[in-house]
Length: 401
Image (cartoon, helix red, strand yellow):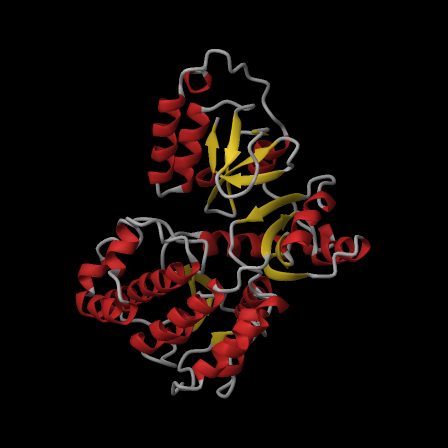
C-alpha cells in the first residue's frame, strides 16, 4: 500500500518546479490568468522576493505540487491508495482525489493565502525534544494562556502559535535539558484560535464551489482520519484555525498497513523531502515509544551541532576582519541565492566561525553572536543557534556585522 504526501508552507525554495512549467504550459497559462502574475517567474527567479510571503507561497506550492503529481501519474499510470497533505498540501491531496479541478483548487488556495497573510498579529515557534504533555504543562505553569499547539509534526517536534508577546516569553520557558526552541518567520498565528476570522471568511468563499466526494481516501489534518463525503467545506475551513495533526495522520496510515499485512510506503510529491524525513522520524519514534514514554530525542548529528559549541579562533578569518564589510555583503547575497539548505549551511560554516557577530534583518536584534555551527533543521531550514538569545535564526534572516 502506498500514500502520496504533499508538502506545505516552509518547503518552498527558489528554483522549485524547474521544467514542470514548460511541461504543463497550458495549465501554467491558466495559473497566470487566475493569479495575475507569472507563476513560473515567481518560482524560478523570485525577482521581487515574494516567494516567502504567504499570499505568494501558497499558490506557488500548490502549482508545483499539482504539476509534480500530474507528472507522476503520467509516468507511472498508477494512483496511490491514500493521499495526505501538510496544511496547504491538503488542497493537493483533495485535487488528487478529484474533489475539484486544478483551477478551482488554485482559486481556493489564492484566497486562503490572502486571508492568512492579513492575520499579522501573532507568531509561531517550533519546540523540539518535548512531548505534547510537557509543552502544555509548561505553558500552563507560566500562565501563557494565549498560545495553542498548532502543528504536531512528530512526537518530539511540535509547533506553538499565538499571541506574539507570549510567543516571545515562551522562549525562556523551553531551555532545559535537550529542549530546543526555534522562532518561526511567519506573519501570523496560523492554525490557532487567532485565525477564527480567516476561517469564517474562507468558509463563505468555499460555498461558492462545487466539491465532489473523494475518489481516493484523503487523510484530514483536522481529524487525522479519512474525509467523509460531507466534510470537505467544514474541514478545509477549520484547518486554518485548528492544529495540523500530521503525526497522528502518519501513525494512522502506518496502522492501516499493519492491519492489512501490507506495510504502508510513503512518497513525497512536490518540492523537497521534508515530509519524507518527518514520516521516517514518526515511524522511528512510534517504534520506540514504549521505551521512551512518548518522547524521542533528536538525532545524534543534530544534537552534536546544537548543544556543543566549538572553541575555534576567529582572528585569522577573512570574514571576521575589520575591513570586510563589502565581502560580507557579497557572502550574504550568495547565501540567499542558494536554494538548498545543506548548501547554505556548508557555505556558512566554511566562511564563518562560531562566535561571529550578526544582526537580525527581521527583528530588532543587532548584537547577536553565533553559539554553534549552522545546521539544517526539520530537513529544510538552514539556521544557526544564537548565544544568550538561546534560539535559532534562519541564515537568510541575519547579516554578519
